[in-house]
Amino acid sequence: MTDAVSSDLTTRLGELARIMPAASPVVSVYLNTRWADEHQRERVRLFLKNELRLARAAGPGPALASDLDWIEAEGTRLVDQAEVPEADGVVLFACHALGLRERHTLRVSVGDAFVVDEVPHLRPLAAVLEGAPAALVVFVDTESARLIPLDPGGEEIRLEHEVPGHHRRGGWAQLAQSRYQRHIQVHRDQHLEAVAEALGRLTGSDPPRRVVLAGEGRLVGLLRQRLPAEATERVAATIPGARYEPADVLARRAAEALARADAEAATAAVDAVLTEAAKGGRAVAGLAATLEAVDRGAVHVLYLQRGFREAGRRCGGCGALQPEAAGPRCRRCGEATRPAELGEAAVDRVIATGGRVETVVAHEGLTRAGGLAARLRYPL
Ligand SMILES: [Zn+2]
Image (tube, protein in one colour):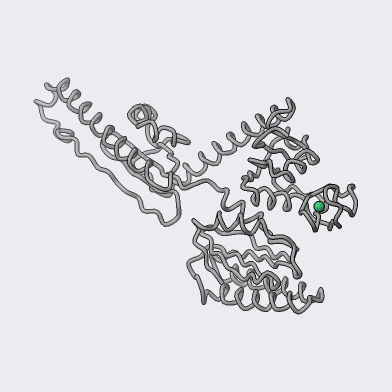
């Protein structure tokens, strides 16, 4: 059994997506392991117990039965936190025929799921990995800056810049007001330059982070002008913010702004794909055309309406997907087909061929197109 680290997980996801149906089914189990209280922990324990009972009641063969035993032992240790107590979510895959027994720990919680199918159930894992890359909130005022990582456990960094003369308010300071102002401005500019430079170095590091600028609008604008080009590209949103606000308040505001920006970007991307599909370019829309593109390995990005489900069939020979109406024989190779949920099956195939999947929450045009569209590597 392997315990994969997240950087390898994208690679592993691609390998799992290429698994073809074997002599015994694959058990996929997702468990949320971050509980606020004992009540929530008990709920996960009950979920696992019920699902195992149902799977055993269905009369599994010896191969699947041994997988279920392993899942039970693993799952119990996880719920008891005898293993990886720091994980927020855990995924288990087991298939006796493939010699597959693996556990992946996640730093985000997942919905509980228990699926016995011909191939691994990968949609929740793909959704986790498609999630936005790490982001950094940069709050700035005239004399300080705060860098707040959005990833859980990230520590706030404060950059302070003492402005000379700022606290002196004697008679001479009044008289020297204009000089004082210029002084402040010079220091403010130096401060912003320093923040911009620090930010340029940070965002250039690995892994690339998105940036949310926070603070008073005019000052944020001045900082933005000073950012190096590669840091400017990473600025995904701008939010208001005040020096006295706690880091978690700024972080939450930034996360909301990023979610809005992502939704807008997704809408624009789907608009563009639907327009291009209508013109017959490097895009397709609708179930039949998208399945065709999926089968040919031509999908660069698959756009799938959230909750998309469609009963269809998968070929046991070549793995091709087709609508229910196509019947029990593969249109490509003539082998027997078996029932499959096409949303899940398309996600697997796209990932297996090196493509990417984006889940779209709400898009009228995509709904009209049947909930499925894709940007292609080349026109079909
Ligand atoms: Zn076939």
